[in-house]
Structures are given as C-alpha cells and as structure tokens.
Length: 117
Image 1: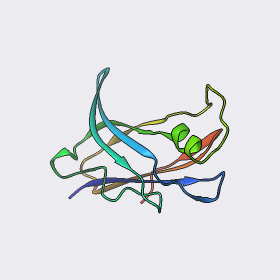
Image 2 (image 1 turned 120 degrees about the horizontal axis):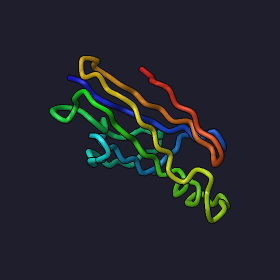
Image 3 (image 1 turned 30 degrees about the vertical axis):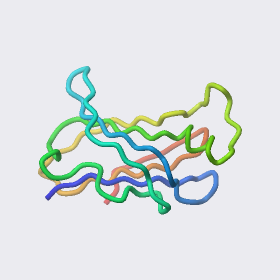
C-alpha cells in the first residue's frame, strides 16, 4: 500500500522541527482540497503517514509547513513579515510508487527539500 511521509529538521538550531503544523492539499486545476493535517512529533516526523490508503492516488499535491509559527514559538524574533512564514512545496505522486518521503530542512531564511526514501 502506498504512503506519503515527511519530516522536518531545524538547521538553525540543529534539531528536529517539533510541533510544526503540516497541511496536505490535492491540487486539481486551480482548486486546492485539504486532504490531511498533522503536527510533527518530537522527532520532527508525523506519527502516521500524511497520505495512505484509498486517498493515496496519482496526482499533484501541495504540502504546507507552518515554519513561521514554529520559530515564533521557539522565541526567534522574526519581522512582522517573516521571510518564510509558510513553506509550500508542490509535487507529483505516481501511485504506482509505494512510498514518497518529502523531508524539509528549514531555517528562518532558507529551506531545502528532496524526494527521500
């Protein structure tokens, strides 16, 4: 059975990004449909796949990470207009692939991602 997982690493503090809100949307044309919402745990991972079962199908998806809220909660002084408030990643899934892993490495002023395993 296919699944989509994610995790967040905080490069600014050298630790997992815990308690970060993660939202997954299915993209259909210009419409976004919310599929799942999760919160990262103390290891920076979601306790369950953000997408699996009947919901796991071929298509375009958008995952959003509430990075600004995370850094504010850690006491990081961000400007009113944070450079990275919500990190948005849009990607495609081929349901014939069993597992997609989308990790995020963040700091208040940069991020990187890749298709993990």
